[in-house]
Image (cartoon, rainbow, N blue to C red):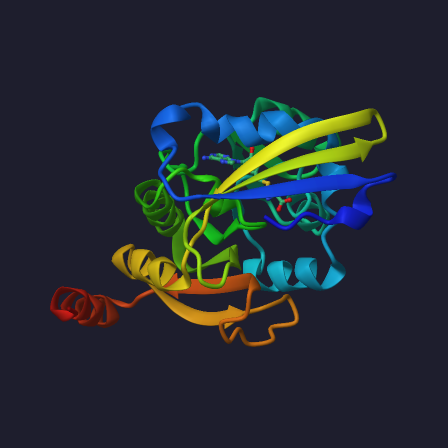
Length: 255
Ligand SMILES: C[S@@+](CC[C@H](N)C(=O)[O-])C[C@H]1O[C@@H](n2cnc3c(N)ncnc32)[C@H](O)[C@@H]1O
């Protein structure tokens, strides 16, 4: 998870621990844990969405609708909705959803309080987004792959899925990040437990869900990603029927 230290009015302290064991069993409620812990000051952790990011998303969404997995306080949902694109946001944190709803007013934003890795959302969407390393907040690879399958199932025939992860060179373990932040309302602490997503696994889960990768960028300017540490944007579309058969054969025959 990227933490922008400069967004803090006074100071930020961050400590990271790499954990090499699976903590999922100890955190059944962890879907809501991160959001509940930082909703109040989330908008002080991250800067507003950049214009280029919103333009890119709006172009992918065409006229929508968009499904955002882990909508948070609406950093992306609100500017998209301002452009008239309908956004459905799913989030496990009631506190996050209460903020996005209070900001939305009459904008075309609807929300569901749920875990996006275990919940099928009704209807189809032109674009499904899961940004800001949100996929890594899931406790294990099984839940991450289930989430990708739900994203694929929520697409219309021309739809795309855009997933933003952080690539960590040489480590696919869990990172525990403790942050102490000086917010406008005083010192606040939050914790993010990230189970890193390797791009190879992401492509495999996507292929199993009937998607094919059509691009991989390191930023919203669409600079190609070449294995660098940092942000990775992976864009997928639905496979055609003949591509589906081809992939199934490849998955079965690969060592
Ligand atoms: C890093 S924030 C991203 C918020 C927003 N998408 C953005 O880019 O600013 C992650 C969001 O995902 C939510 N979240 C984490 N795990 C979730 C899960 N399993 N199901 C639903 N929401 C989840 C958190 O509550 C939080 O609002």
